[in-house]
Image 1 (cartoon, each protein chain N blue to C red):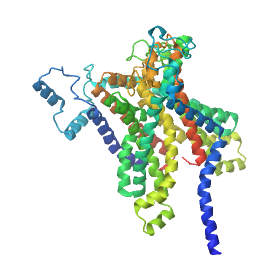
Image 2 (image 1 turned 60 degrees about the vertical axis):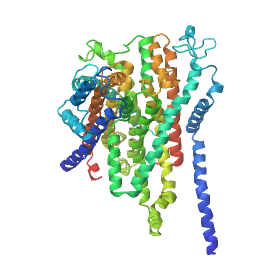
Image 3 (image 1 turned 180 degrees about the vertical axis):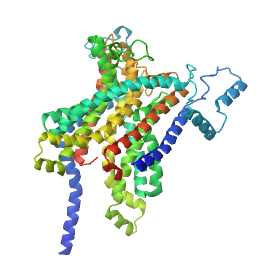
Image 4 (image 1 turned 135 degrees about the vertical axis):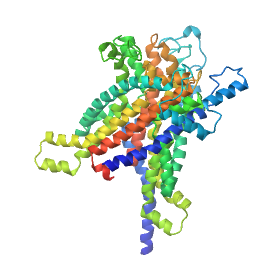
Length: 317
Length: 295
């Protein structure tokens, strides 16, 4: 097991390097001089050169990359061009809010999706299976940002039950788990949960149907085990894969929350990215994407390790 | 006698190769959901092609006094948008750019990704290892994040949007192509072709492509649904297509401010995105089971 974990960690290092290289390249594929947004249009050549030296743009790409990577490893992601504040602290604040949203959405999506998928797989080809399949197809095909708008239209504009945007009193920095704050969480979290719900339902349905066809289930039945007992075995066999899918979905939601956060003005990383794009704040864009991508890579690693320790059969593969 | 047996075998082979596509088609027709989805998708494509003949009004021509007219207004069957342009015409014309932005990246990524994956899968060895490790890096980004990162850095614009979506779809397609090709390469008839002295290029062209393109294509069609949502999402964020063009994601973005005035009018463009995405999704599912591709 330990050697498996070490091998997996070792394999992640080059991926992380590659990911940071892509993030570094983002600033350099963007058109125009990276200093244009800081310097006044009539800046003198000397001032330009001075600024180039301060930001290190006068050096070669490999040198710039190593310098940037070194600073990033120390937690310095540069300063936002728009606000002048350190990117790292802005991203750090936002990540907390996105986590609140994404974790809530994953829990809702996994519970409902798992339930739908399980029932559908267990009673295969029944009407309930068809219903669950339809729900999962809708879940993966619906443009979630539009679904968010429809939710706002129904529950905020027409019914006036829930607030449409924001994260409650205290804005982005003070989240409390009370009703006053949680009513702001309901609409974005439910909207977001639709994505993992469809995928989890689909996966669990296939898993359960597959397990039920295996010989050991007939063996258990032949031994005289009741349906309830068989159920426990099915859950035990489906759990590792289902949990892995849940972990990956959390990662996708963290990285893909930008559209939903924009619809609901939720003060997380996606909202920050939106601002960075709108104001062409490249250090902020780069830093946020680096942090989110690293989250995803680490989460993948954790999911792999957790899945293998739950299901040792995978180690051999 | 031997000659007859040979001829019979050859005829059977011909009939079998014709029979495969015929049986795919029969199986597809039996799947009512897939046929319906296919009709809707075809209808949307026809709507995009014949937009100038179908649309009742000019999609760019607005009348300020008709701004945000509700659904069912005289002369504006689906209302008018925030600049008083006919909503129905804009939705019809919107199919052009929206379908273009959704489908083209998948087609380009299919061509590039399949080429990379087949080459890596057929050549194997260190070429395979290096190619797949490089793709793993792009794979390490959630797709929405990567698309937004690239088009956010490049800035708004149709070309930048197409480029970023293409980059997003190359790694998954190449991965599927690689795994399918690797499994085909190990089959005995490829070994036989190699032993009889056929060149790599010829083996790939004559013996590999026919067996791998089907599954890769089916996988690529399943990405169109995701691509539609992502492409419209980019425009929704102000990346991708820019005003005054008619594109569903962009329309959703500009109408979002009118949500308290004409809520259901503002939601209309999303219905089109949803309809397109779900019909392509079900069409692809139908194709997969008709072609009996396991994934």
